[in-house]
Each structure stands twice: as structure tokens, then as C-alpha cells.
Length: 240
Length: 298
Ligand SMILES: Nc1ncnc2c1ncn2[C@@H]1O[C@H](COP(=O)(O)OP(=O)(O)OP(=O)(O)O)[C@@H](O)[C@H]1O
Ligand SMILES: [Mg+2]
Image 1 (cartoon, rainbow over the protein chains, first blue to last red):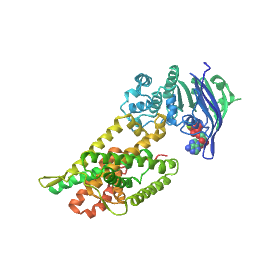
Image 2: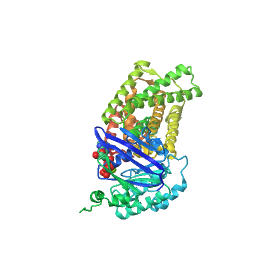
Image 3: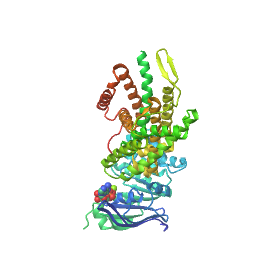
Image 4: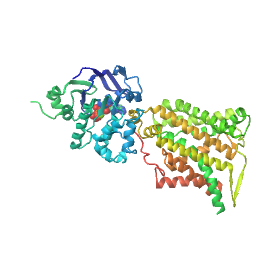
């Protein structure tokens, strides 16, 4: 793995009112890596992603991308800097067409990059077939493809994916994970939040395990896959 | 038949005014899920600002140039007031419970209404005759120049707004923000700018509506915003609040309805019938004629 650090979180604390959701999270992502954040429901994965995108403001700590501090930035500037976020629950614009959704993904570009649009359509041919269809009428899996495609339209350097497998049939999950691999091959750094630990670790170079707002474990995917704790908690295997 | 055509012409005129004002309610609601109760009073204020521009800036000239300056200057002043209103009354409450924003909107309405009274006095003022009184008698139906101007200019503005929203990049940002603000932010859209933009557009259109009210009815009072605001608000609801073509359609429909009630029954009954119409439409289509998703956001 190349060792150029692209993205760093240090001692991040985030609260909802008086409830602390992140209690000092630190992590690093190197250029070109796929890094996954695992954790049970309510561990703080989505909170982490939303704070990176500045939809949520940190209480303390720092988030740096290519040396720039994000925590004081408005959300729309983060996108311009090269971080794109495909959010939990997809959040596609349901009353707009598939293509309108994709074009909105390119909002920060002065001109829509037709090469990227081609690429997205090649990865997800169903989106091209349904380009004039309203996004809200797509199936869950198709909406997930659209959310990912849309987030690629800004030609990001780093892609945040929050549970792309949520509520999707296993066969489609497999297809989507294959395309995440392809996205990575094209040079996009990926930070992937997943509950589907096995699939995520097979794909990722490294991972972090988040447990009620703290990093409980970190390591290469092989290390995490072999760790008793991960096996027990996320892979459903009893350790004897 | 004469009454029908005459009231059709009158209805389209008032309908245009309702539609212009309704757009301000609907656009703000669309993006912020907020009823800007101060909008009607902004419309009233516009008529007074127009009056002052006429007397103080244009030296009571009624040339075409003067009329254009009155319109542009009034719309610009009101656009600034609109942006200021959002900054002071609504932005600080963006994350507060919904009721706080409603109270703030009602407060802003009172402040503007009383502001008009303090500046221009409590008595009715006469709006200048900016357009010569030209009438055409089309076989029993009388149409005035002012009616033609109101209808034509309103249509141009509404078509322009529609194209802006549907065809431009900024319009796409407005649409995205009205569907899902956080998702819009993730696209790199500056939602604060979008909100400022809709206050600029809504207040300018409302200002033109206010000037039309002055030109058409001539008498303007500090509290007239309540009445016109209510009608335009109903128009926005009839069309489907949050929906731009809906507001245009609702305005026209309400204007025509009012004119026909006035023509065939009695103008004293217009208000009562308007509410009956509103209730009937809401029974048949709770989201208004073109409204789709009034589902509350969480
Ligand atoms: N808007 C909110 N208001 C209050 N508390 C919240 C809010 N959003 C999240 N939380 C709390 O913060 C904690 C972390 O939530 P978060 O959504 O980040 O978890 P997650 O790891 O993404 O879980 P999941 O796997 O279920 O998506 C949870 O305890 C949750 O209840
Ligand atoms: Mg989550």
C-alpha cells in the first residue's frame, strides 16, 4: 500500500444534545485504499460519515483532508474539495429522474464530465435503461446504484459509502461490492461503512471497529477477519 | 355571456396578482417547510415603497421610463428586505421546533405591518395612476390597458420563473433543496444561498404583485397585506403548497372563482365561497391540485 496519508480524523467528539455519539475517534486513510468502518447498530458509523461531510458539526477534534481542516467548513465546500458521500438510506431525489439525479451529482463541476457519466452507466447499466424514470420508482438496489453513481459524478478523490448493502438482496449486494472494487481501481479512495462485516473485510484493505463511539479495534482486513472479537461479534462464529 | 367574458377578464387580472404573491409563499414553503406569514405584509409594503419611489425619486413622472424604474427599484428594495427578514427572523430558528418559526413569522408580519403604519401613516393612500386609463369596449366587454399589462407581465414572469427552475443549474439547486436539504448539501449545493435566492425571487414577485394592487385598486392601506396575503396563501394551498406551477394555477383559479362569484352572486359572498372552495378542494385532494408530497419531514 502506498503510504501517502490522504485523510485523518483525530480525537473526534460529536454529540446530539447531551448524548455523546462519538467519544474520541481517530483514524487514517491512505491514498488509494479501501478502508471500512464496522460496528453494531448505534455504534456511531453514520455519525462519523455525516461529520466528515459537515452535515453535523464536531464538538471537538479534527478532520483533515489533503492537509485542509474540514471541521470549520460548510458542507458544500467539502464536496468541492473532493469528498463525495453516498448517504445511509440512499437519499436519492425521488421526484426527479435518474438522469437528473446524476446531473445533480455533478453540481460542483462547471461542466458535466460525460466520461464519468459513461463510466457510471457502464458500471450500472440499469441506470441507463431507466434514465428517464423517476428515482423514487426504482427498486431499493437500483436506488443504491443511483446513490453511488450520483456521488461519483463530482469526480471525487475520496468516496464515503454508508451501508450500501442496507436492505438489498444478496445477489445485488455482490454486484454493488464488485463495482466498489472497480471504483477503487479507477483511483478513488473509499471509506466504507458496513454492518455486513464479512463482505466489507473481503473488499477492504484495512478496517476499524467502532463500538459505542470509540474505536475498539483496528487492523488490516486479514487481521480483523482472524480476530476472535470480530468473529464473535460480527461474523456469528462462536470462539471456543 | 357578457357577464361571463367580463368576469373572465377581471378574474384573470386578480388571478395574476394572487399567483405572483402565491409564488412567494410556495417557494419558501417548498425549501424551508415554513409559512412566511410576513409575505402578505411585504406585498403591502411594496405598494408604499412604490409610492415613495414615485414621489421622491421619480418626481411624480408617469413616463414609461419612470414606471420601469419604480418597478425595478421597488422589487430590489423588497428583495433586500426579504433577505434581511430571513436572516433575522428565520435563520436563527432553523433548528428550533417548528412552532418557534411560526411565532417568529407572525411576529415579523406584525413588525412589517406596524412599520408601514409608522412610516406612511394609518390612513389610506392613493396610488398614482402609472398607466393611462385606456379602455377597449369589445362588444360589451370592457378591458383596460392596466388589465392587459398585469396579465401580460405576470405571464412573462411566471414563464420565466418556470424556465429558470426547470432548466438552469441554479433552478436545479432550488429543486434539490426543496426535496432534501441534506442530500442537496452532499451534492455541493449551498443551501443557504438557495434560501436567500428564493427570498429574493419571492419578495420581488410579491413586490410586483403589490404594485399591481396599487395600480389596479388605487387605494392602499397599511394592513391590506393581511387580506391579499390570505388569498394568495389559499391559492398556494389550492395548487399544492411547495409546487410552483401549482401556485400559478391556484392563483388564476382563485381569481376567476372570485370574479364569477362577484359577477353572478355577490361580491360580499366572495370570501365565504372562497373558503368553501378551499375546503372542497382539500377534501377531494388533501395535497392540493398539483401537490404530491406534503408528508412532513422528520
Ligand atoms: N439525530 C439524532 N438525535 C439524537 N441521537 C442520535 C441522532 N442520530 C443518531 N443518534 C444516536 O447516536 C448514536 C450513533 O448513531 P449512528 O446513526 O451514528 O449509528 P450507526 O453506527 O450508523 O448505526 P446503524 O448501523 O444502525 O446505522 C446512536 O446511539 C443514536 O441513537
Ligand atoms: Mg448508520
